[in-house]
Image (cartoon, rainbow, N blue to C red; front, side):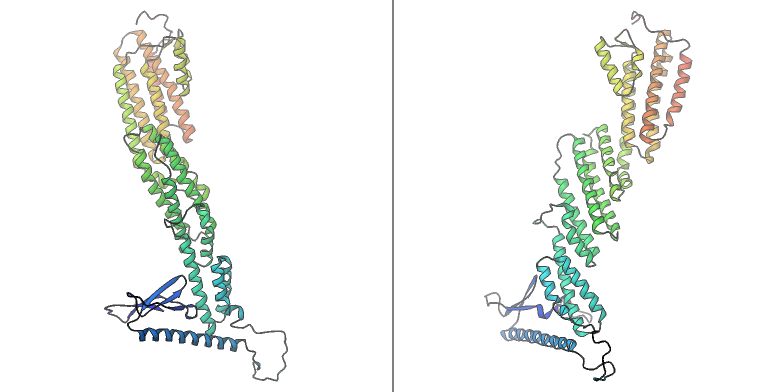
Length: 510
């Protein structure tokens, strides 16, 4: 036993324990005298080497002599006990040497069989050759035998030697799993499968779990660092999300194989949550900055949520954690987009002349109709006349595009917690443009101009229908706000359009 002297000890404990080694497997080597080291010797116990220095040459000689005597004494007593255990007993249970044996083929199991005496050396060989699985089998077999003879002195001594081999095996496997700059992490989590499995078999599940997760953290950090922040933000975030959630998924699959009894499942969940929190910090530094547009930020949030939705495949659902980490950013983003759209509606309303659009030629007309069709507005053709005239103002078509883009962004950000915020944003922005339409109608008394305003209001009904369809297709639930907006529009159109609309036959009034 190795211990250090406790200086200024105030209690009964005079020494602090360091390590315990088997005497018969411990080698003592003399150290050559040097200027700085005198009267010293080394104690070798793989994989450790300890150097001790004595005050005098006599003390050193005494130490070496005592250690050698103790080793010889232990070896002789151990061999003596083994011979006694293996020697046949000439007497039966009654003490009668002449009693006939009714079962000559039966034998009493030895408490210290030959295979048990040779087991420590065999374990040394298996550990040196890295036959870890076989070493574990031998350790389990020896433990089962030693448990059957707990009072036998020789068995207890062997049990100590076997336990020391088991500790040595645990230390070797732990060193393999530890992360250091000189070790490669190639091979992913699968490379740690063998070491983790052996530690679990040795009853060191907690230690194996801790080392495995630390290794996973290092691999994840390394893979993330390999992604360079260059190019478009959306492209970089897509790569970053793919790498992160792929690593989390692969680690989860390997974790389930290594710890099949789910005894350490809580540790993996806590680790995954911590990794996600760190990832969101990196994500936020790249996405939620003044240089990144709201639309780009929305795409990035949709991407990270989509990648996170893959984790339930490995029995892990962190979507609620991700949403909780992003909630403050999403709320700010929705508010900013709403305010920007309201400002744009206000500025365009001030410049709106309420005149049809002159597209100059049929090619420009086709291009505009194709653009609106891509936005989902198929009814724009009904407002085209004379090949290049559109009975919609520039402000109306611009609002339709902005509002539908706004809708798409909000649906990407949608979570139940933001249901009211998103619906309010959709309502306020639409009502703002509707107020502009009503105001224009009230300011003019010309019948043709009033019919033109009414025509633009009818186009807004088509926009609301698209909102209904997209909302339902994305969320699987009807949009409650459009019903009120549609009723308001219908009342306005009913009050303003008393006669049927007639297409303009001339532009002389312009």
